[in-house]
Image (tube, rainbow, N blue to C red; front, side, top):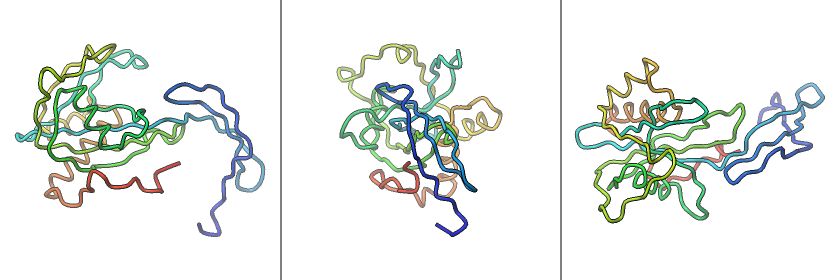
Length: 205
């Protein structure tokens, strides 16, 4: 840290809400030049997303209802990292199987992102899944709630990127994953991190 950087210190914390997946807190934080300020934010368990790319260069996209928006939107297979002891790559494989009935023979890391750093600690790792296969019918996940209403679509990666740029795809995880996948493909898949790559300390709150 340079001499010009302020060390923001939390001197008090109040938990406003505590749930199984996230909590809402207010921190009293020291400010540059003296004094403190209250900062409200969500402490989130985190999540994973998957850009599942088939041999024809098509990505698997979902249409899923999101109640805060009141409509269905385009998304990647994704889900929370809410199982104790489960690694990020394991979580991604589980979510891919549960939401799409697909497996993958090759996994790489595409991108890590904070989805809304102004109000949440949520960190999402987006994986690239290739060499796709099908989950046997007897082993497929029984979907409930909004997941029972999922519709699956295979879309050419370039077409999916075009939908990002026209504003049709707005989910942050989906936008980041699609753009990262297109860039990685254009670079010949060089520079991808292995599926078990550690999360950088710079990205963790």
